[in-house]
Length: 289
Image 1 (cartoon, one colour):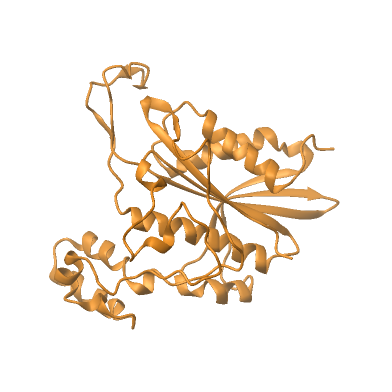
Image 2 (cartoon, rainbow, N blue to C red):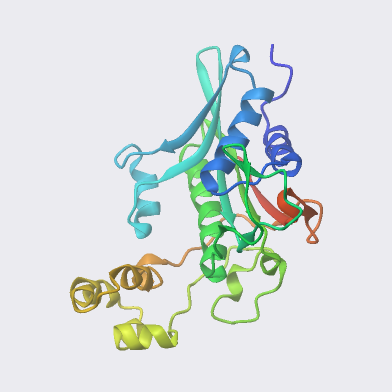
């Protein structure tokens, strides 16, 4: 018999412990996935019937109702981690989604323990660049919550819930958003069953310049602009990035449940690797009844 229960609370405890106790600087979301997966394999052992899946893909056509509900995003869904528990030839699942957003990090003079191939770096070397667009980061977190809610809803016989995690060294994410265009995606408030919409009625100045006002309506004009505009500009990557802010890439959505993000060790965060202060919020998605 397993020495640990297969419940949302036990899995959440394992995941948050891995994050809070980590003393190694993580460069990207993949490293965060591996950190959490290793902890899950340690706590939920294969000999007890547990299987840890990474990048768990749900091909289109597997569940028509899920496909229809997830269709606005126009992508094949992947789940960062899925923990499976097999008992009496029947499986139960918990989905886990991870977001990891970083501000710029440079080596400090005292960071002598951080080495690459056995050698210490010079003071001031940039380890990671600043990941801006906090509004997108907030949207993507709540999109993860919605994906997990849809998973629990449309696979209710086997999925017992999900956990969405947001880890960052950017303290701004703990603050209340004052810009009305994105205030619905706060990480400090409850999200109820009201419609969450990505307000792009007043596009940024760069959007007006590049797309000549194409983003001013919700009638999906940006898809047409994307077909022709990149050929006229050298900075195609920026054009693509700009198009991702448009309506057809940021669909509106609402929740069936009410969710309130909770902050691990409070909104003040904790001191982590390389002297960085980290902040972690999480949302638990319950089993669909």
